[in-house]
Length: 199
Image (cartoon, rainbow, N blue to C red):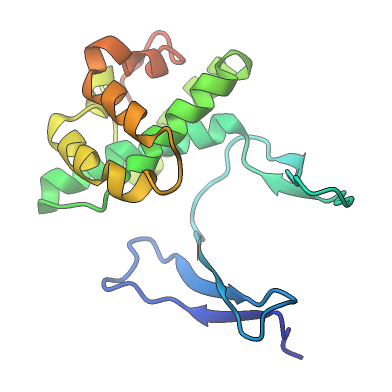
């Protein structure tokens, strides 16, 4: 029987998804609404190996009533590796076909994770997982600057305010930080991986 609070419809990209992902839109009707007003886009990968132990975490819930639910999540180490790998994938695509979708959020997510949790991250696990993640998608790196490709960063700068500013007040300040990479030293992010090894 259909759930009257939720609707799910397939979502079709203009071009086929590269790795057979499943994409759909969930529309939710809150109890005080007559029609669904809340839209959530979901993309599910079917071929991504999970290499670190998943963690059972409590949902963050800021309301007064009790909400004692937990969900399985990626470890932060796995997320860091996937964000770094995604940057390399998009740099590769940019050079192969001349365009790629903006992934400003990958830099933002890395900044946020490493600002808040750097000391608790398992560096050895990241160093072990990242080459495997990269090999699975056919990308590699030789030096920290491979994650800071100038052509790719131009696209990041142009889309940062459009996509991230509405979501976080930090967007503009982080844009300035990334633009001054000598000051920010994006390599500080990669210091999580000393010494940086080529794949």
